[in-house]
Amino acid sequence: MRLRRRDWLAGAAALSVVRPARAAEPIYRRGNDADPETLDPHRSSTVAEAHILRDLCDGLLTYDNRGAIIPGAARAWTVSDDGTTLHFDLRPDGRWSNGEPVTAADFVYSFRRMLDPATAAKYAEILFPIRNAAAVNRGEQSAGSLGVVAEGPLRLAITLEQPTPYILELLTHQTALPVHRASAERAGDSFTRPGTLVTNGAYRLVDQVPGGAIMLEANPHHPDAASLAIRRVDFLPTPDMASAVRRYAAGEIDSLADLPVDQIADLRRRFGPQVVLGPALGLAALVINTRKAPFSDRRVRQALSMVIDREYLADGLNGGTMSPAYSLCPPGLDNYRTPPETEGRRGLPIDHEAEARRLLAEAGFGPDHPLTVEYRFNVSDNNRTVAVAIGEMWRDLGIVTRYVYTDAKTHFAYLRDGGDFDVARYSWIADYSDPQNFLFLLQSGNVGMNAGHWSDAAYDGLMARAAAERDLARRADLLFDAEAIALRELPWIPLMHYRSKALIAPRLHGYHPNLRNAAPTRFMRLDA
Image 1 (spheres, rainbow, N blue to C red):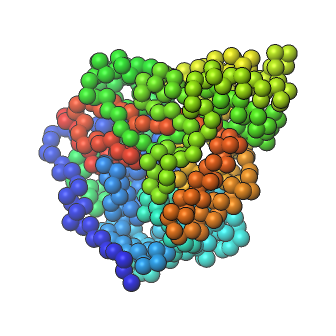
Image 2 (image 1 turned 135 degrees about the horizontal axis):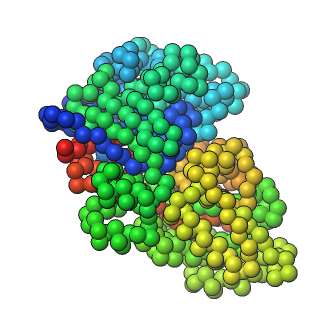
Image 3 (image 1 turned 30 degrees about the vertical axis):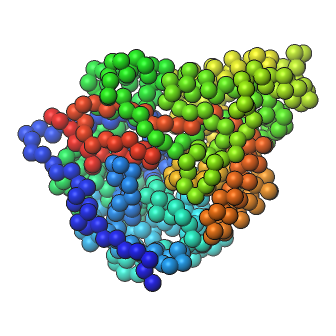
């Protein structure tokens, strides 16, 4: 029985931007946080990659420029009454960038590839709500047992393990994007190169310069190709925020996806309404290597957390563009309650120094034997400022901090691949507004995300019970109890919750800050 049906063929036209006639097509020069590690959606894991892949690929569902879920490769879908089966009708005019039709079989192949252990997808758990996905990913069952089936050339069925409140949002994620089978199998790991990459989104890859521009142009075979106002977009990595602002001021960049927070007041003075702040579902935290002494000692982790002045980090250093975080989950999530908090909210950080010293002393550290911490972070002006400030806060306890920093691609790959560290900066932007998308990061066995290798049987048990719980109120209580364990044990030390911050040139139209931080190029336009 159908619970609901949406046919957006007419609505999609209303969302499209009418392409104005002009003699010369302007290029949208789009600042992006970092150089992507990969353009393979099934190996992707960063926000910078998501921005590019959202232009290159259409999942079954996607986002518009206000963060609303809209049809992608599917024109309509239904959900069964029990919430465990979804049917998708694909657009009959869907095409790959080489002109071939997009079919249900393409999505079956892509979901199987994503979950194939040989793909080594770091984000595989995103799709574990699909029936047998976890077992397939662990190599315990064949790909044919996955709950994704083509019921016809343009009809796809997805069966879930249990009702999943956020499943539609999951299907907008880069892990659920399709890959062109023939290209991927023919070229292997090289299939993402310019001239080889075949995609089904509004844009196609033209060229890629490592550390430089990633150039996309309108995909002439896309069903909405004629309505694209922006025909060419260059994604420019901008890890050096100060340099990026200078380039923006000189008219070399049309938008920036991040800003140097120590310059926010000056940026507002210089650019006025071009500085755009918005909501976000994100966490900045310190990951602790819990398999390495002395950081395996909870007392050490607690002491490190207690003296961090989160209000200063959020307001003093970040100019109010972040908010202090005493929990992993930000407030206001769907299907949740007010999150639990770790210690430190009451009073000033100096009020907690005596307790922090006592904990360190119990763990064997003091003036004659100071704790030394290696702090790893991905380099940017903002991250460097925060790292130095935290090191100063720890110095008041006699802690010696050494810094190791690399570019974002190297940093996150190092953590995901099991590199050794003491304490490392980590950032997470949620893929859907549900506490599970924050708390799953710390589950045992989540090798790609749980970089500190923390494992707690009680935590895992609560997460498993929550996954099977159909009553949303009881599910929220289980997730609350799980987060309380994490905040007591502190394998991650929450620092700040994100707000989006951008610079948008007056000639760029159609950008709307939203909770998903989704801004597909296809819904924007440029003045000449």
